[in-house]
Image (cartoon, rainbow, N blue to C red; front, side, top):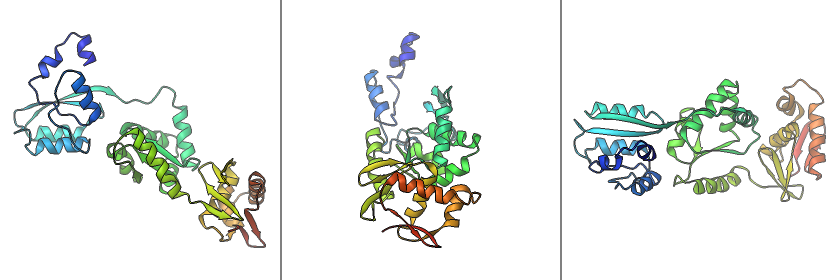
Length: 288
């Protein structure tokens, strides 16, 4: 609408005789504020339901009809092809496109952080952004680590099913709120994370493992990577003994015989509570 006004084009007058479909409430609001009337909107707020609606004949036969499809940073090739296959003349209208930012350092830092399991969750608000993160992870050589982290430890939260598409295609299980809204997305994170990281009672203290830290008796304690790795390994099986060789493999890849002892010492010092027990000649465990 703004572009048409800038170019002095009577877009509203041209569209006044057309059937205008809105994919979701944001588009519907913009349509109405622009002086048009939307004829229909899908309950799912998805392009797939828009396509189903058109192909069902609800708007009449498509053969010979001229349909303009406004693109939202995605080419929507399947939707366009399906409409053309049904006889419609389709005009794709790219209003904007998604590109990587000029400074990709934060994104590259994010994929490495995810691969290291140093975050609890990642939120996604658009499908192109999700696809871009996976693309950069591959470029950085950590895609396998990112996929493994999302499979075990890092929660992927999408604002809606459309946003989740590239993640699900890559084999990443996602959760999403019922309504594709940012507020609902935030509430989904708040509700889901405690379910994944239970609060343990250890040595008379409450303990909850987080991505880069631990909550001990309500106090957030940030940990260095090696102590965090040890604690995460012990917390997977509270009370069970984890051998030094098993811990060594996770802490240093088995290359430094003293790495586990150093990591446990630093972990105990940071926590300041008798949470980690030594089991002589066997290993370590949480004092549950």
